[in-house]
Length: 133
Image (cartoon, rainbow, N blue to C red; front, side):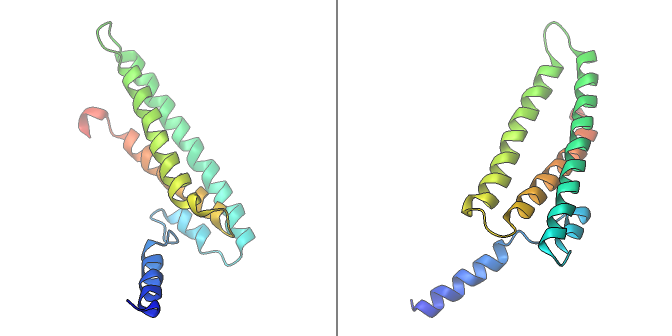
């Protein structure tokens, strides 16, 4: 294989693997900003909002689960274990996949965007009762 063919394949792979397209409209709006500083401050705000929404949703689900706890089974313990495992997944997905290549220009924006998207996805998941998922 020629060097040109290898380089072409690498460029194609990088374009398709690029995390610059968001699935969340608010995250995409930050990415659409023209300046890096604007993207970063926008993404910081989105990241904080997503985290606050996730925390509120999780607290609500955990509180409801505690009311269902029985001696034989702890609904709240299961929710806590699920959340801990989900956070490990999110951290590995966002910090490992995106941040694993080193911290270059724009990496912090991408990492915060990934965290925000994952947090918003988890909020939607927590809104659906477990027995209906």
